Length: 275
Image 1: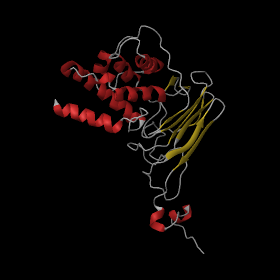
Image 2: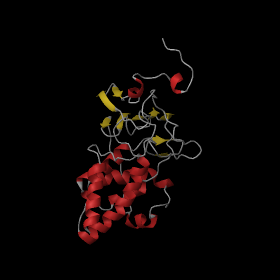
Image 3: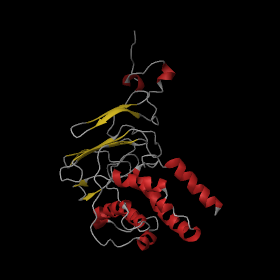
């Protein structure tokens, strides 16, 4: 009992950011939730500890609901941006539905979780991570729920979410990975997904998307001599009804080995003559 509580407390303290962003990429953040839902149900029934309403978990799940992307006509459903080690479409609405079962009716977070599930329900099928247990926990929604309306925001640990006309047919949504969370993010700092007026215009397909996913297939700004695990940060930004603006910075660390930032030709091993 002590070990279970201490381990859960350690994970929630270490990996749940103030913005609600989980320390891992979206694919793993959702899988972690599937494990937590079952574990928390046991903790609640056996020990009387309600982690479903723990403030850290409410931030985490609320962040998943806000990170949820617009309708993607390629898949005929809503999905999450495939930032980091992830895939398209990213399906996990059933995990949120099972979580919603443990929240009180009238709770805004419960409503948001069910709304996310309903946006994916037509294509959800039972799969890995104890699907029968999750299905048994899940309530049957008694009505249609609406996603909460979101504005642009800085999710400090993971990146920037920029939105225009959220929940409308011609919604624009650009999410950029720029933050200190690092697990299951490789070679993708500054990667972004951009839905422009309802059209998936420039997309990061993640690592696991069938036929197109590789570890380096990212939309990003690549900088010479930047350590692949180096993390950037949002130096400045402005969100307004007329304009969203961000200024991001990333340290270049390998220049310390050379005393300067090398050119791509030098890095690629080509002969370069320097004065």
